[in-house]
Length: 370
Image 1 (spheres, rainbow, N blue to C red):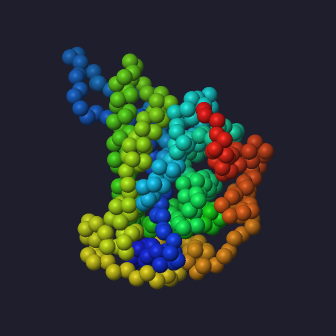
Image 2: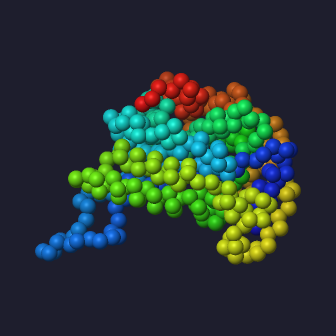
Image 3: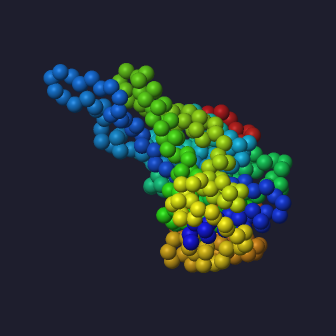
């Protein structure tokens, strides 16, 4: 029932587009270990005992980054999609941020999560929070950055396209802040049901595995060229950038969306997915999904979020809240015009940092190289 509800949701968007071409997007997060060591291959063990291993502190071996990746079924737009690396204050050191930003390109963005925020250049930001994982506030900022990238890629044909963003059922993706950001940016959400992302999310089924293999290969090459074998964070970010350019930006992902049932009215669904869903010949209507079907795609006790999604994006209501209240008292986002969010923090330095992320991307044409 959950899979059929998600597919009907996709078919309804195709029928609702009114002649516009749908652009399917998928956004998801994945953890990237900073130490990519492995034991495969030829290992020469010393004659007098001992274990052959890279002697690194436990803190370095356990250190991880969060990669927020976005793919599109349109190859011409894929090269503009932002890829975001998030690390905490122990992973991205303050004194190294300008060096790390120099390792990025126009689509790879760094976000350093720290308790004290400050403004940096366009390719690297500091966000005021303790964890490096994605929460509701940071996810809303990423949605605005994605909308700006779409506007830049589709100019002057923005009115001929409609973006649909596939999200999993992570509670941060379904917060009021994110739903308001999607409304302001005129992006339609499509929630992949819980416990089905392994089979339905294109990033999980087609992207993350080859991407992590490519990161491992670039890491091994960089490590082999170093005398001490310790890959610094700037070199590791460069390895991730090369892997993203080869795998994420260098391939077309329309077939991935079709294989997972989000294109061609489920005519291109893979045989493995048909067996997994026990539906060998899926025949899904294109009518509007009911409120119960929307609730089936969302986590438990999300009836209020389901009603908001159904009313805003499926019923066609023009609901645009003027002020968005956050569950966190130190942040309030006020949506003053479509596609633009003005974010206010607890302090002036935090306000400047949040505005640099949500609105600073609009000044890309005036960007100064870092």
